Image (cartoon, rainbow, N blue to C red; front, top):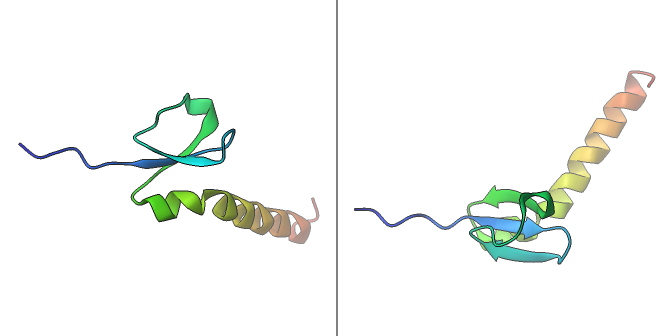
Length: 61
């Protein structure tokens, strides 16, 4: 039997990475395959938001 693969989550309230979702779902971004990916969660969210805002501006929103 295979061992479960750990998943990592970024907690937006504590600003900490959690292994295997220790907090409620409303506080978490993820899952990510590695601790390092989870550490970059907010940067990814910010980059995606900036891209979406730029598209909105192009569309005249």
